[in-house]
Amino acid sequence: MERLQKVIAHAGVASRRKAEEMIKQGKVKVNGKVETELGTKVSPNDDVEVEGVPLVKEVPVYYLLYKPRGVISSVKDDKGRKVVTDFLPEVEERIFPVGRLDYDTSGVLLLTNDGEFANLLMHPRHEIDKVYIAKTKGIPTPDQLKNLKKGVTVDGEYMKAVHSKLVSADSKKNTAIVQIILHEGKNRQVRRMFEALGYPVDKLKRERYGSITLQGMNAGDYRALKPHEVKLLRQAAEENVE
Ligand code: URA
Image 1 (tube, rainbow, N blue to C red):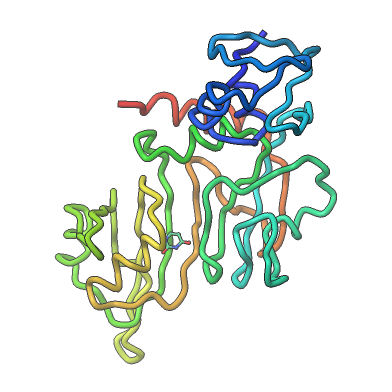
Image 2 (cartoon, rainbow, N blue to C red):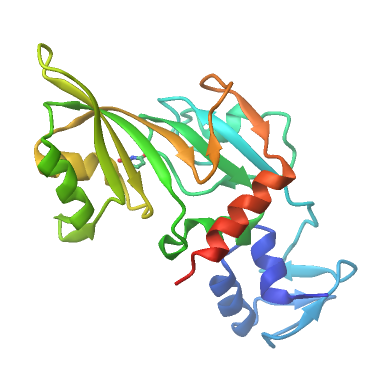
């Protein structure tokens, strides 16, 4: 038996908090009857409906995609552009990306139909390392990179890195390769942080998400996460709750 809000979150329909709201608002039915009690427990045999739509009882699945550049981190696009789920055509479950990478950013992207797992990983308090490699126009100084750890305010939003270092520099071309590690996942965070320093990002790739890397993969490849990898990610997120 599981709590109703958890079952709804697992199905990827809404976050747990949103599910709680919907229950309170009378938008959820269990076996055909409106259920507004948050503590209600349901079993896999119960039929749950959210806003008239039956929950599909799917087994949770977890995938890693090496997202190429030029793809939207979404399950559909109004303008018909390529979306990340186009790269996993054999997956029948209703998967969605865990957070997003920009259209022009490549790298590690997790996809799942487990909404609760996604919410757990995305919470900045859970301190999952997200490791990025960026090519910048101009060469940041060691002090400037250090300052990213103290934090910068960009467009009124405070954001900081956990770590940042210069990997290499090409003084002729006036470009640099830098590594930056974040726990936060604010919109276009890496690009905005470097832009604020005066070094626009030309190319950006997420190399690692927690313990998950792109080892042995090419852009556009995907694979199922191994059960122990899912467990490690979950543990990393749960351990780090402050
Ligand atoms: N930071 C960015 O600027 N873009 C991404 O896609 C991810 C992190």
